[in-house]
Length: 238
Picture (cartoon, rainbow, N blue to C red):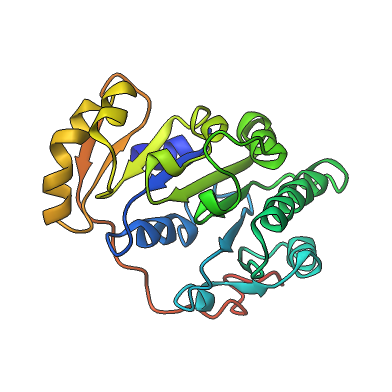
């Protein structure tokens, strides 16, 4: 995992996989990891809880609207669970734009220097494969340069917004129902032969850090710890 962690410090990560194969657990590993960035920094991790997963709620401060998010960002909270409202697809698209723009506003207008790491679960709910999306484009192309990083989650690579996918060198994939022809066209032939094995070995995953090493297999990440108390001084600002 050290290679992926080093990569997150410079760019964006895509995590794909079918439900119940470990995708959310893998994301939580990074969400709860206090050593992703320089120990002298005070990063804020924000998880967009698109599915309203109650298992995630105990791990951070709850935000249910942009005002809540801004309050927690203003107070430099380390972990924020943003429970996305149940709204229409077009409204979700605008909602994600607002969230991304809020992070850039805190970086540019409020002069906040600490890294932001935004987890976007079920990204296909916000933008289709070939659809334009100002927020995702801004995040994927200029975010890393401003220390605003993203972890993008979807069930298949074909679900991922194309402009975003093209900017993400880091990729993790658990078993997924993906078209072999699509994987071959993307230069991911290794994944075609590995999918039956990944299906039989739940929680294992393949990863690619954009280096010459290509795709490699990895053992399961540790399960999340017991729910934390976000008001503990370890997680909350003084």
